[in-house]
Length: 182
Image 1 (cartoon, rainbow, N blue to C red):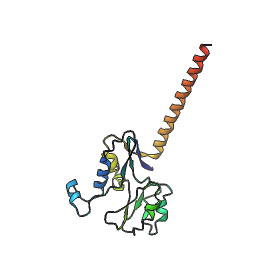
Image 2: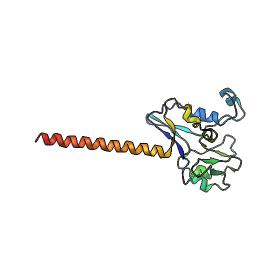
Image 3: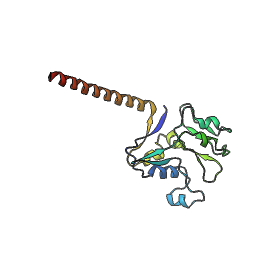
Image 4: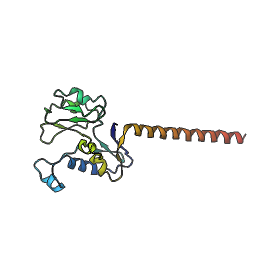
């Protein structure tokens, strides 16, 4: 089953708890103090962009036809499985930045040491163990959710159907009220 991180921008406070937790999840340090004092400080794989009154968490969307994967000359960017996330093998990455240039969401970064690129990996170790990605767990308002794509689409269709049905009922009521007033 394919899963993805979705964002409810109306619930995002812009607190960046997700950013901090993402950075910590990708470090070997055991505490924040150790991580901040390490030779290579932690680096998050997502960003919270302010937009009007909202904060919009942005991370790799793990595109089906991932342009970053297509342009990578060393195949450092690859898909974990047919339905899995798009991963980046830093050992194979030569830092050419082709992926950075073609990413439609601007979420691929240069690593702090400048030798390779970094991107969201959906916390693959955690998700393989049945846990949610670190950013999702850290979100205090539930603005980030890790959902099954099929279930998410089913829920969206149900919501659309309910809105349509509610609109038709209101339209029918208006027609009936107009008919009663004649």
